Image: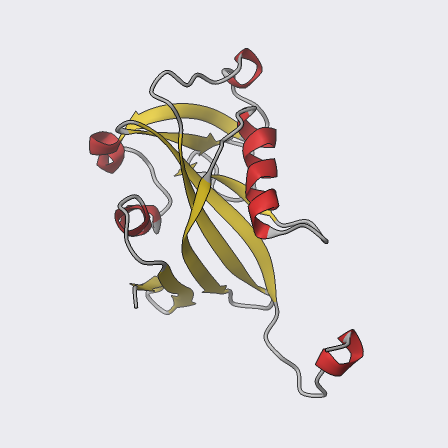
Length: 170
């Protein structure tokens, strides 16, 4: 179908595509504590990721974000979840969550071992995640994506009570 044939006269919901990646090393996860000066999630813990650039496929975007934020090269990523995020005002976000395994001896290159403008990378044991200031969706999301299984489909929206999270598998 030609691009002009894909347009509609009816306004549709628009989204910004983003990637989120969780890298494992045995029972550890590589996480990023947001810099105190960040506009979003300052001092909170998240995975690696960011926007998909125009013309970039999702897998390439995830690999680029890993390289930019960690200096690591990950041989294989697995898409584990697709989450639609409805924000109070458009556009929304369509988040593609990947997981990648690193060898047990994987280390961050020296340049990324110190905090940056993005924040501080660190390895965390999976059994200690509950003690960290994780973004509020991560405990539930990680429980779904870190174990093998079917692709997870989710929807986040902001209601009167705050963030509402729905995650399901087929």
